[in-house]
Image (cartoon, rainbow, N blue to C red; front, side, top):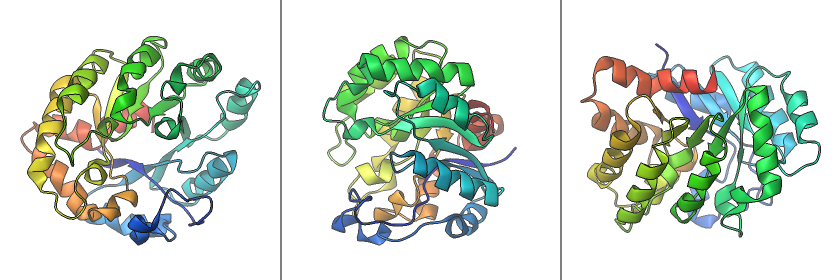
Length: 276
């Protein structure tokens, strides 16, 4: 079974376009490309990855597909499309020629309208995905989880995955409301969850491994070993942890699972979900 990093990014740093990478994140204010990631995957026992959009443009799809076509270890791309566009079906049809394009994502966490995913025009676009076999990555903050229940309920046949365990408030040790909402979402079989991005929600300089364990307990119990997948969120994770540190947190935690369950977590679930 292949080991897959189901969530990472490549970019050629542009301070205007990538203004979200502010000066507190100076360590990632540079280019990150496939040749930078490949040795890290190998060192950590992983064979491949899924690259996820960081910019909301179709040019981003072109850039990431170029990387994926050049490097065999880049197994899939999660791109971006304007779900509110009148020609959404036409755009999805266009992208369906690219075999490594597996799904799409919108940066819902950044929308002023917190229930943006429930807009009729946005949902119209989401409804088009299933016909093309595309997945959808849900990128949200915990305050949006309540809306997400209605969102996933509206599309029972659409494969969804929650990015970064929905970014709980690990630094502040808040868990109760997030836990309840995640348990609710996990009741929907078509919703998966990425164990990724946790270090960025912790105290960047002073986190300890056991800061994450209460949150991991919640997602493992709620989603089970068949609907969780590993993602590094590299290079964003570098603001708080090295690639090896990020993997060691989850490797240690999931070491008590059976070999088959670990195999699912480290690659099998991602391969099935994204049809890699």
